[in-house]
Image (cartoon, rainbow, N blue to C red; front, side, top):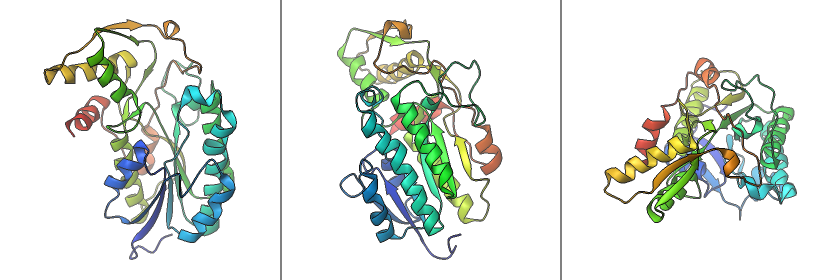
Length: 294
């Protein structure tokens, strides 16, 4: 357990990623943030990770780096598995050796989406593609390491930077007269700021000696919608600003084939995190409004 009087030294991977950027904002004041990009901590080269972690001697590791190009992963499985599977396990082994916790972010894509209700942490994963399989491999490697850990599965992550659905739709809605969007895949759009804020709350619980059980948890915004519904909400914001907007047409996923199959049901039940750690998230519309207001 970290000395409560000493400032935390937190090592964060994935410097320019959506979640890491928000972590740098939301964890300010908690201690020293050691934020490493690919040039300093390259998760595609797992064998080089150990020395870097040992050099910094952190009190907490947050792995916010990942190979998130879902379709691209189908063509480069070795790279996806190195970044998403092997390296998280190495980080966890180093955390175990230091006697410190690891916080790691995973995904709804570890499930196949065939369940009719939201997925709980007790449901058996069955990923459809390379991305989901590589993320599951990372989860299993962390669990096997013996480190105190939080694996936080989230979904449909967006923010005002990087590559994500929100920014893509904002652009396409203003460029095109009509836009066809998948309406039969359901999930919870989750702002990276929500994830970062919840991460801070979890760290503060741990620091205060009020930690729940370590392990795997679901962390998404509350509520649910489709990609079409998410796009409608984005369009409403643009229209309110007086900006031109495409006419939207709902389509089935079968009308928009992609190299990697997506889960039809990406809903995650987040009640365990609320019960164990007393950490809850806002509904997705509220979080979207806050994100766009920035």
